[in-house]
Image (cartoon, rainbow, N blue to C red):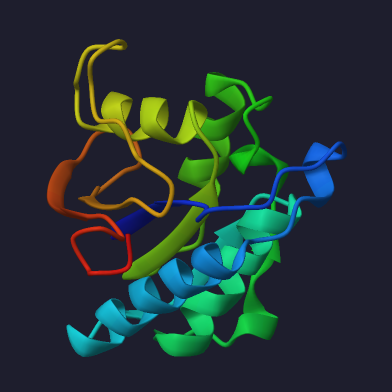
Length: 159
């Protein structure tokens, strides 16, 4: 399976962190990522997002521009929150049903740490996902993996 780890795109500032929506720039970034995935022929078979508004909105926009799972097939999971434990995330990841392409939208620092761990990189100084950064990791078992590609909104001209 290929796991597509996507950090949410740019959000507005606000007092209620869980309710912060995407900025206009963040919406544009998410649409650019979805268009990139569609252009290279990648459609998601499953999609999961942190329940926080900015991650959920990012996932909906990416799925709306990309192919595969419709935005209404997106599932909210606490395993993609920063507060989720490593053990909890790993158990959840291994419990996912078989699929070829799985979108996972979450937050830093945990998302970068999860990708780095799958790639066997050091805990500090591994892969750092910027807002809107997308890392595709091929993993046969959810325990280790190989980086297939890494793109950012800036690389896609939406920085």
